[in-house]
Length: 279
Image 1: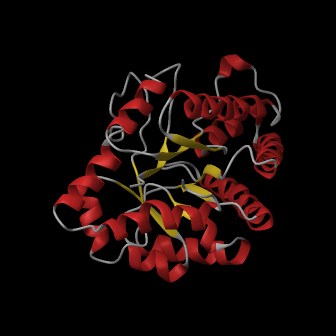
Image 2: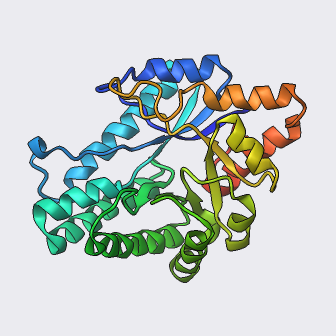
Image 3: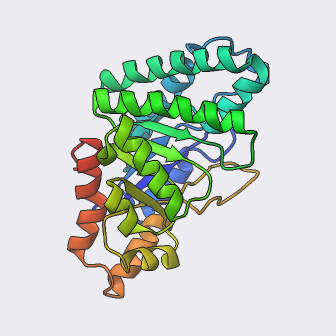
């Protein structure tokens, strides 16, 4: 049985690193998307978007290490976190920050095109209150991401503010205009399966049992994630690395999910969205 966590961070510097992957695997997890966090640190002296290439290569190398040293298979997802973009704007100004973001996007395109990474993420808008010009510039960068996603046929994991129905409809208009809805994933999504299917995108839902039960009231067209942060200062946040396999197995034991349902959520949808083969 395959069990995939669609959004997990592994951080050997600030967290427990590969030990978290081993926890995931020991609970029954088999595959996960290894999502880039942030390279931003004022002490690093970031001056160009190309500097982010070093951070992307670090995640790719970490993924290779995970795949060699554990029983889980990881797939690197690389992007420019909205909070990171916000910092760039504050430090370098709007024009220079956007130029750096586009350079970073070029680095992302190269690695995905070479088969070293499997999607863009997490990208979008800050989840906290910011001035309108930050939101506007973030949207402008998101448009460039959606265009690239459509061009090279790769998925995008979106990080945004808290969503409701109207926000989903707004997102749907943006995605249809500039991107390919079938390649767009709303990370940290509310369990709103129907509206996501209506606009063509995929919700990725934190795998707490109550969230998944709520999602199942509307269908099975969704992904599961932990958004595990792997930070020793926030242990277990957002939820722990065992959560996706434990919740999946629990719902199987209760007869709420069938093995066919699990195969659909954890294998078929992943293969369809990411263009990979789960084996």
